[in-house]
Image (cartoon, rainbow, N blue to C red):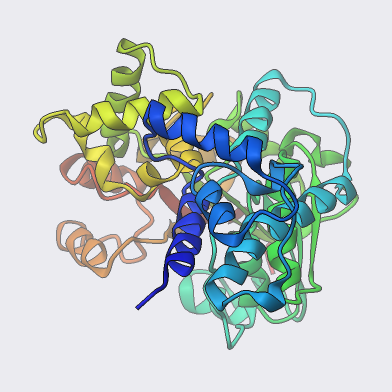
Length: 401
């Protein structure tokens, strides 16, 4: 059974991981402020843990840092997670190289959002113990791609819009000989990403602050570019895609993710609900929003946001409901989007095998599942299919070999 100090330390870690999204009564707030005023270098671990359930401990200048040698495993983890890690990330943020100032107004607004709400605040990434050869994976995954149209040996990968680094770390460990450049607008997100990469001892990822619109200044080309959940936050996603295509090597591949218009119905309902109640994206307002959503009858669309993981963290909720700019697509719009960029659609990363089976039942002639007009009809009948976004692969028009 956990003792009081260990329980409070574990609870503080949970509150920190959710970014203090839980509702707080006025009485609690007053009590926390009294504790803050009384905090000093010798404050005991129990009091620090209580404070850590409500406030960022690394931002309390009067608080000391307890010696880990005198603490239990859970207490030490709390000190590391709430005090030491954020302070290291602050230092890392100062050292990250920048490609230049962000000029686009929408990009500036998105940058400001993710400086305050780095997303996602993940704690574990999928461990890849046996990295694959990229060319072999592509040939197995997409039979239409010829062997001479895939790179051999080490590959250069760009993760455009890497956020807090989970995707960059996973892709860096997925392919043999991968050399990864991970780019994002937000220094706070990049610092989190670099800290997690350093913890894993990875030396094949370089982090860079930049806007996708400025990546034309990179004197590099890539075998693979991954841009997941990013282009739909740009003022002109087509322009962003054009920049990325220009960074691809001949026969290069793109892996993209974009919101599905049909699968965003509950998000649109939640955003309208917040707007009607004049709730903005500030932390206190988002706490109020959650309490009001809990009171909504379950048959209303807005109540569905409670079923999402993002509802349970501050950055997740902001990204999901209060994002400063986004747009969504249908399969036919994806066809036009890729067509304008002269990119060949290779196929979706489907959420389940059931989707594969159900689609093939009604579209037996589409052997490789690449007919976006057929997907348009399928999604109309199954609007929640791409609730986790359209995630798909495409490539430059292949060189004749």
